[in-house]
Length: 431
Image (tube, rainbow, N blue to C red; front, side, top):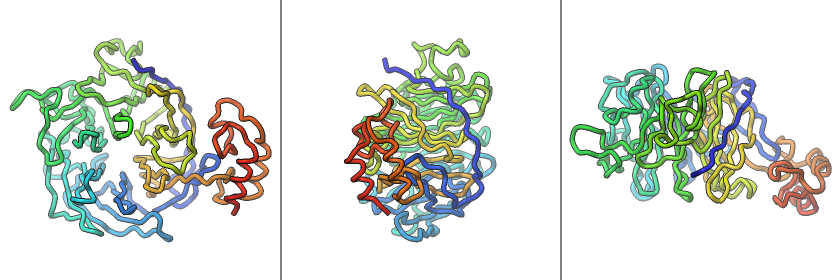
């Protein structure tokens, strides 16, 4: 049985999310910079094999940009004509086909207008644009949208080559436990829209054969970590701030995540109908404690430009509390720590690791795509390595206090001691 971790987090004050282009407050040694500004409600992003970035805007417009260009220019890529946009409806998420280099296919989850139904469609990439005519609807909710919120939006390919989509309850608590309804579920289908054998498949009529797991409130973001074979699902908690919890689940075939009977740990006394024998126990969870919260599931870092202790760490955000944090795990996959990373990452709606090893995220109301890069030796986060960083390193000289990492930002080589190797590393990045 895996261990769970509970954290009581303090909300962080907003630092002016409406001012696009300003640097956020990065952690020591990192730079948080705007890559693309002037966007209209950027909601998701993904990277092409050539390193270019596709940006989704909630209203249905998509842009393409090279994040390594100077300056970065985002140009029109494709605009969906029939997108319902009231409240939380809109273009919601994107994923690329595992064989994108060969077939150019990508997939979009969005709210289709007239009639309003949640839809998953496949499109074809044409070099600098997306081909609207190529749209193939591979899944669509049989029911019209009940309420324009709690729509889910986790979309990714699993290790089995199949598409996984998380859907929300649309503020209808009956949907998540109803296997004849698509709301509050993990949907699993083939890339052509056919349905594989899933845990609740029973043929025509009865259950929806595409359901892989159920019992979710609003799993707005979810993504597979293919090296570990784990599907991380962030479930946004309830509106009763005195009892609500934010949950991070690991997807499993046939599991009941418990909503509306469960929030927080499966033995949470505030939810007496939640049973550890019947419902999933989140791998990580934290309470609202009277304040708002909204978990944004992110990514397990697998790049090679962040310090070694962050490889395998799970980065997540909170859209309401305006931060990005990360979880660490032991060899068994159990959470061992919940660490601060960036406490001014405002209104995050999506996090993605770029091919350059940086973390990219979409700030919905700031109208920007931001990038967090590691700058070895830049201990004051100003984008340069200089005298202030040198003095900071000298001030941390010697063994690092526990917990290490991350107690010593000047420990550039990760040996829990600030010494000559770190000094030489700082000099090597001077300027």
